[in-house]
Structures are given as structure tokens and as C-alpha cells.
Image 1 (cartoon, rainbow, N blue to C red):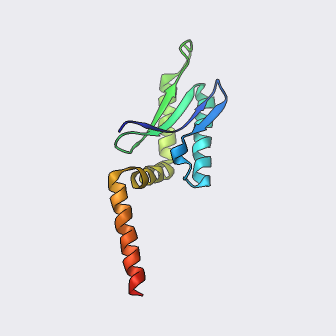
Image 2: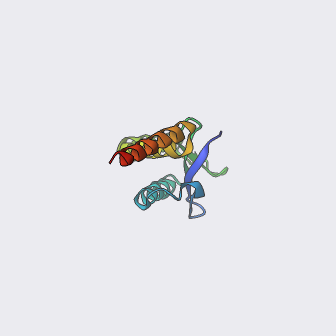
Image 3: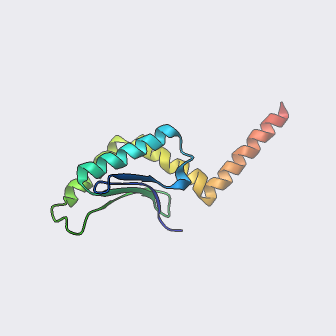
Length: 124
């Protein structure tokens, strides 16, 4: 398994993209992800990506134009750190959602919870 892109926004193209596998996210979460990507792409003047690593942790990536010698790598890192600090709960919830719906362990947990719920329903 390799990295999966969740969403991306491009400052130069003025476009936003949400990977189709993540369309099942609640609308409010999708809107927050869109806002994060678009705002950071505009603020940093680059393409900003959010995605999941093989381990299921969120990663953030900035892609600058080849001819953009003014891109502030340190400023970009500081903005990402600020995002991680200010949106800690949202980012943790996204990682949990990913773990449940896209990992083998998550499938096992989901199956166990569904089985327990079914057993509880049958006891009534």
C-alpha cells in the first residue's frame, strides 16, 4: 500500500480536488478539508496536498512551481505546524475515520462492533 491523496488545491490552476474514495466523508468534514487546502494553497502560492501515509497518518505536502525561487519552505512548514496545532481534533478524527474504513484492522473492528450490536439486538 502506498500514500493516498485525500484532497489537493492548486493556487496557479485555481482548482480543488477530493479523491473519490473519500466522498463518503460527512459534508461538514469535506468542507473543512476543502477550506484547509484552498486557504493554504493561496497563502503559500503552491499546490497543497493532504493525504494518508501507509500507516494511516495524515501527511501534508506542498508542491511549488519549478521556476518559483521565492517559495518560502520554512514559512510553509510553519503554516503546516500551525494547521496541525489548530485543527488537532479534525485531523485526529480524519485519521480514525481512515483507519476504520481503509485498513485491515479497521475492518476487523467494524465487523466486531456490528456483530456485538446484532447480538445485543437479538437479546431484546
